[in-house]
Image 1 (cartoon, rainbow, N blue to C red):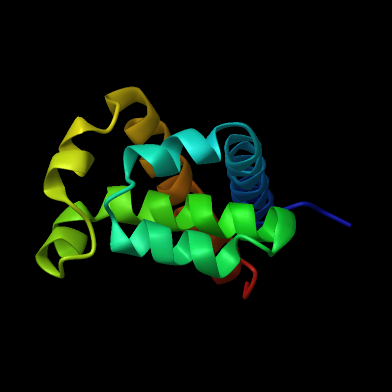
Image 2: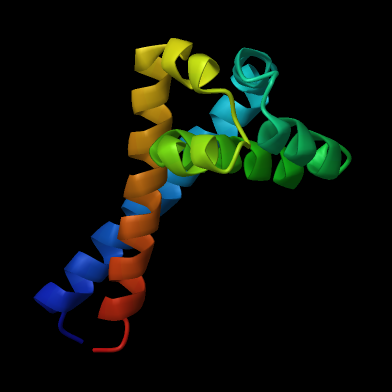
Amino acid sequence: MTITLVDLVGLGCFVLAVLSLLVLVYLSYRHLELIESMLSNSSFVMGNKNLYSRAGLIGRVMRICTVSILLTMPKIFVYRGLVDSREVDSFPVAMRCLLVVLWNLMVISFLIFVCMSEY
């Protein structure tokens, strides 16, 4: 059995996606309430909090991922009236960068992994 470059790239992307997800799980366990309190006027965040609050760990991960999506594309959410632009602007830059990078890394790595698995 030989390991090809395609296999290594696929495995690397899978590992990156899993590591990103694990960090998001940690953040959802340790910092979710703080993050949600910084976006307390957001109907999007509060609606997801009400929807997923009784879903355990998976619900917490869903909530942190929706905040990551919101911070990745804030103009769309502001335009639709789902979030207050002042809250997004006052969100801590370090936490915002961490959430955006983790979300994008997880999504891109997973997509590359799926595309590479066809070869």
